Length: 97
Image (cartoon, rainbow, N blue to C red; front, side, top):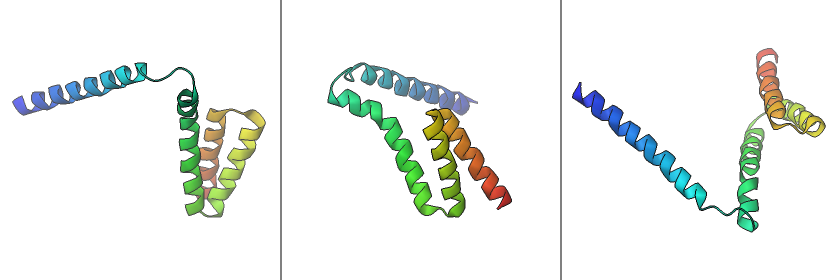
């Protein structure tokens, strides 16, 4: 029983340390300038790189789902709707084709 509580307390301390370090480092990030612009663009760049890699590894189903997501993105400019469309499209294409 002692090992279990030691593990729980250790994991709680590690979780707190990760969150605290993120908070402390986040306060030091720039609010303006080229670094701030780069950091603001980073999530979109990461998503784009992941999608591009999956498309390059995929076949016609992945390309059709990517095309559907691109059309929704161009029409709505909504990231959640675009991601939902891409996920739904690839699920449907893989299930029925």
